[in-house]
Length: 427
Ligand SMILES: Cc1cc2nc3c(=O)[nH]c(=O)nc-3n(C[C@H](O)[C@H](O)[C@H](O)COP(=O)(O)OP(=O)(O)OC[C@H]3O[C@@H](n4cnc5c(N)ncnc54)[C@H](O)[C@@H]3O)c2cc1C
Image (cartoon, helix red, strand yellow):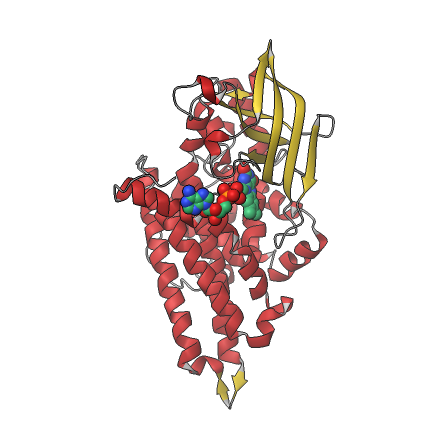
């Protein structure tokens, strides 16, 4: 339950709402948002308050809302603006620019709760970039850039997308081929990106491009630069939506650009140091996406448990059969184990630990545990698992995202093999 003390830690605009919630001893909102982790025994007071407040907002956007959005393919602007109104879009960004300056611990709870509410990856992806995507701007931008870029983002007036992946180089990020050539007070960008989430609807783009050819740098991580700049129809940029399996409300795109002038004042940090800046937020991003996977896994498990209690075949609830009950129990244990690794990674990140082993391991474990939970939820619904009205088929489609992005399970194993076990680099 939210206490007055912890509500001091929360977004300013969320505080009155939290105080009202706190004055009710055990609100319906709290009951509805505790879901499967009924007691959430290890959450801090401020995480519990975040969970309760976000859960209350998400109650306005139930599964049926997300199912309808998936069909209509409309960006969930009302959901987004509700979060902005409550001050949640700047949960981790500095108070000076309208954010709340909280830690990754609170942001993780927020993203898990959003996904767990039934919003899944559609809801999480609508706000994901706001939560940690602008970390390079917040950490390495000039005072003028922070004011110019963070304030409208936190207030919900501007939305951003994040463009690193390229069609020809994929996970081999350092070989990316997009170029930015300096010409006086601007750069000229040319190249292509793929899978760029919300490029159709965002007004800003954070983009990584090569400013020094790879043949002229000592290390391939040098010579890349980062820009945060405008994205609109008047620019020489072609954005084409990719027809895909899930998240209808959230567009994914290929982005092609040629002769695109980007002012030097939109470059973040020093020229040639962009990769280091991007790396800075990577552990946080893995943790957040892991938490989103957890949310989906718990949502699937909740539906599986409800259905298994209600559905009677052969004269008894199907959940009385151990073939149904045990896989669900196993999934809860696996989700909780992943949650604990993610919680450990989050604590270490908030304490300034720079290593990536726990963030990567947590993201891997959460995505795999959530995938299994979603698959089992579909199977225990029998034929109804295939019907959209039970929502578990949507969860199963969406849970593939955290297995693929922002880094695949194979690349995480490569990382652990090399960095933790000291094995030879395999790629
Ligand atoms: C829904 C969605 C949203 C996304 N949003 C964004 C976004 O907003 N911005 C952005 O920049 N990107 C985004 N991405 C891209 C995403 O980060 C990449 O798809 C992901 O990093 C994988 O890259 P790739 O698709 O090029 O795979 P590839 O690099 O082509 O790899 C293909 C397969 O080969 C495996 N593989 C490759 N090399 C090795 C190796 N050495 N050892 C073992 N296995 C290997 C990979 O693990 C993978 O299974 C998104 C992707 C999806 C699906």
